[in-house]
Structures are given as structure tokens and as C-alpha cells.
Image 1 (spheres, rainbow, N blue to C red):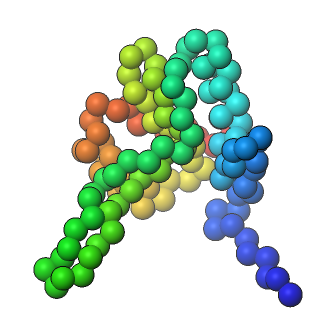
Image 2 (spheres, rainbow, N blue to C red):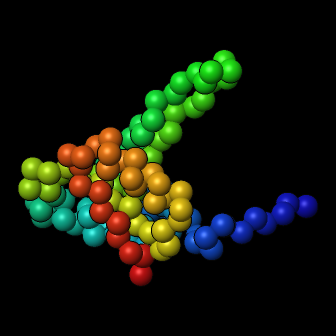
Length: 117
């Protein structure tokens, strides 16, 4: 018998065509951004782009530590500026820390948090 595991944040994964999103709010935001891209307001729309916040390293005990990666929900170019969006229902402590690391590592990128509705 398979056990049903509830999502940590009580959201439901949604599939739109070949793309899978972590929530309905994220899927709706994708539809809106796709319309913006088709209208020419934004360009180069990407889904789930990844950014290295801290490279992998070996600590003083010889143990290899994995890189710290941030995965945004969307990335695109708007008015010549690279934008990364994250659709959030609630900002976790882990996200707040990753946001600070992201802003320090990529100051030229505009990180936007979109409230899930």
C-alpha cells in the first residue's frame, strides 16, 4: 500500500503542457509572463533557472561540501535588465538567507518576490 505524502507547504504540483510547477500560483504567473513575452514586454523567459550562491569546497577536515544553489521560478529580460522571480506564499528563513546570498553574488540581477494569491 502506497502512503500519500502531503506537500510541506500544502500546495499542489501543477502541469501545464510539458512544464511542471510547484503550485497553482506559479503556473498562473507563468501564463501571465508568457503573455508578456508574446506581447514583447519581456524576452528570454526561462523556467526554474539556477544560480550558484556558494561553490563546492573541501572543508578543513577533508570533507567535500556541495555547492549552495538557488533555483528561481522564472528569469527574463525586461527593459535591458535581467530579472529573476520567485512566487512565494510564505518566505521561509532558508529563502531569506538565500535571497541575501543571491543579492550579494548577483547585484546586477533584479530579484523579485511575487506574493502567491
